[in-house]
Amino acid sequence: MATVFVSGTLPGDAVATLAASHRVVQDEAGVRSAAFASCRADVEAVVALLTDRIDAAFLEGSPRLRIVANVAVGVDNVDLAACKSRGVLVTNTPDVLTDATADLAFGLVLAAARRIAEGDRLVRAGGFTGWTPTFMLGTRVHGATLGIVGMGRIGRAVARRGRGFAMPVVYTQRERLREDLEAELSATFIASLDDLLARADVVSIHCPLTPATTHLFDGPRLARMRPGSILVNTARGPIVDEAALAHALTHGPLAAAGLDVFEAEPAVHPALVTCPNAVLAPHIGSADRPTREAMASLAASNVLAVLAGHPPVLSSVDRP
Ligand code: GLV
Image (cartoon, rainbow, N blue to C red; front, side, top):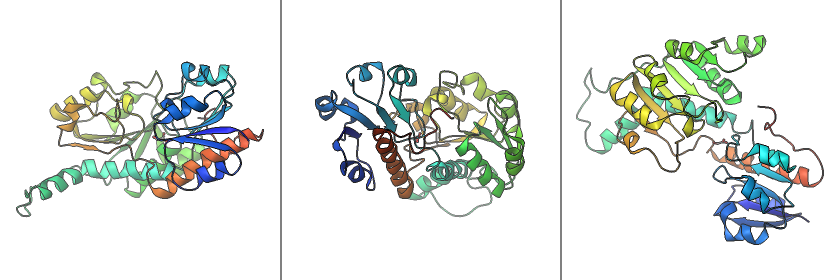
């Protein structure tokens, strides 16, 4: 029986499954909690959240640790090199959250372009005084060109949704997709991000956060986007410079933005909060109940497999 630390509260029966064969210690406050400190010398597995920072200092105090099972597809909260050098396996939860996250991304596209959140605020404030032909005109989604930055699982799922809205799809990432996938998605590869921005009316970000993608969307880059375009980010906040985005929303060229992630969560840049054309969601990309249960269950299955000496059930950490 190994000691397994579970960070936070997980939906579904993942914790019960782990507790059936291991000693489980759980704490809402995550790996910085007193509960973790009291078991860290024994802990062999950690079910971690994206709000837990797993770095060299953390690993130092947990000499028996064998696996960090992140309940997220992104693993930017984990120092992968430090884990590797200590022989600690890191797993994530790919596939199970793809459609939920793509749904939310598309919801943000629609909400931002068609001013849905802004309209909701207006109605609640008593500002709806009657239909007129010029009231709250937004941006057309149907048939607009959709630009995907990072055509992994989630990017491809967003592209499929875009096809349903008759959107020509262009994408950029380091490597071009296989021809059959490109054909299935009717997606056109554009090697340079700046060239993609010159073509896309709606840009949706789906790349991982790495040193190379931090502030990938900075002031100069945002300034190169098409006048009246829409930016959606459901990946990681630091990929977009929030202060620069607020400027681009206020002074152009952007018409609107939909954000599910922020640079310093849970804080949001005050300038963004005052932009009526920014739709702000509280990092709920994967937050439909079956998806979150599936993520927790997959993380638990990965822990059980690794503690039993088997490979993880499913993880894309070394297979982005
Ligand atoms: C959520 O943000 C995730 O990476 O799964």
